[in-house]
Image (cartoon, rainbow, N blue to C red; front, side, top):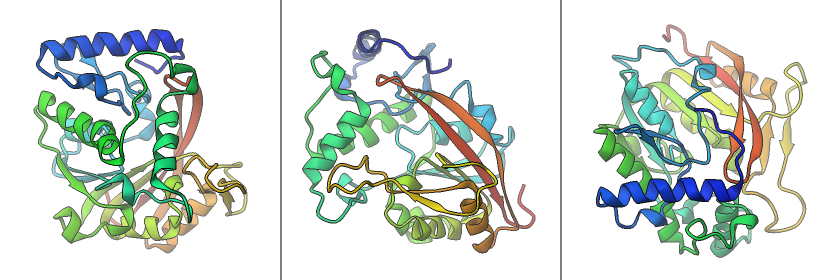
Length: 293
């Protein structure tokens, strides 16, 4: 189940086997999909995701029984975590960008440059000549085949009732999400893609009446003084859509300042991003309101 480093040609063959199976089920445009997450589907098959969290999900320490809880998955993409919360019994809202035009960008960056960055973050340059892995999409097409269609296909095949909403993280509100608040809010690899991480964290915190979990890269050591590392470089357009990395103590102090009774690091998880085969390591911080489960 774990995401293992495999040759890009082997990954391409895995994608094609999955696509062939889905075409027999009537999904004729399946070759155009990008899969951010590995998601289990009926019949013993799984999507060929860049990130496979199935063997490391216990590191997040999610409650095994989430019945009676409402959960919000922010930046949900294919929806692995939203479906996992649903499997554990929660009533789940999955939220993602309404369009890639709403993705934060450094001043002056053009949408066309962002699209190239996103596609090469998904598929490395070494795969450019491999059939079926690389597409040249418009902003609308990339949003559909990366964020929207994969989630909706997984939801349909799983018989899921997860509700999909569209908003930037800054715009999270009862109006955009259809709920006054949530018992459980999850932010996985989202804040590093924001130019205003304080505003983004505040917006998510306002929607949380129980537990908020942040999982992402956090630089330095756990006992370092609170700080935020700038990752955007000095050349316009050469960043990886990643600008700010608060360290662990920065997160815990900010979350307490935002009204959480406690904020602690509970562990890490590691894996390999396919097909680039880049290893990654993320820390997990839990913040709880008074009385949260």
